[in-house]
Image (cartoon, rainbow, N blue to C red):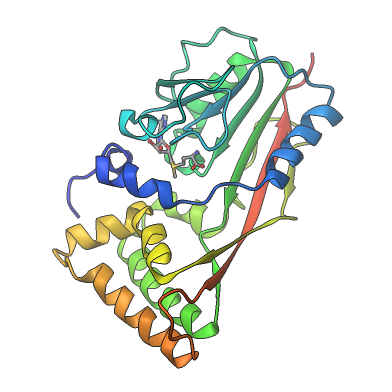
Length: 260
Ligand SMILES: C[S@@+](CC[C@H](N)C(=O)[O-])C[C@H]1O[C@@H](n2cnc3c(N)ncnc32)[C@H](O)[C@@H]1O
């Protein structure tokens, strides 16, 4: 394997550009976060989105990658973005935050240090919510699913590392540090892709980019394109604008810091 550290991946400008192809979370996800906070009597004064990427959901958003933050929206009222590491949130005062969220990033973090920091910055009664869509997208038509499984299998097998266990099992072994925390698996994210859009989405996933570079196989993405084109033809979808349907299971871990 090359020496590219996984978090350095997000500091590459092309990757940050490709990240614009990633999914936006639906309103339902934010409603769930809102409802959980409301049901637990939490205030809505300060929310912090950890590893915010290009700011898909945020009030103070921070990310270790300047390149990702360059894609964050500008001049939103009450929203600010900054560079910081989730393992050291010393820019936030103790007991000052109502809500900490992390989307698609907990597996990058040193859990012990991160949880210690979360517990320090959250107010008593403050809420911690981790949410991800699953790595295991379901594509339709089934021919497209088959191609996707083949290539994603190659990539996953190549980079087996312990942090991937958490991605592969949709965080089922991860527990929040608060008693009574809940897991919610009710939602799905749905999207339709053209073939180009699908490739753009794959490009935004760090392991695909890494696989292409480390295999010295610059044709890897082109191979996927060709195989997918063929699969769509077999499914009778011959137009360049034919849409591949995609659905991701979405999971949320939600907990509250005890009030006393
Ligand atoms: C998969 S992206 C998720 C971005 C965004 N939350 C979303 O849902 O689209 C993971 C992000 O975690 C950031 N990241 C990884 N390790 C970090 C750390 N220790 N502290 C802060 N950000 C980190 C990366 O720079 C990247 O932007």
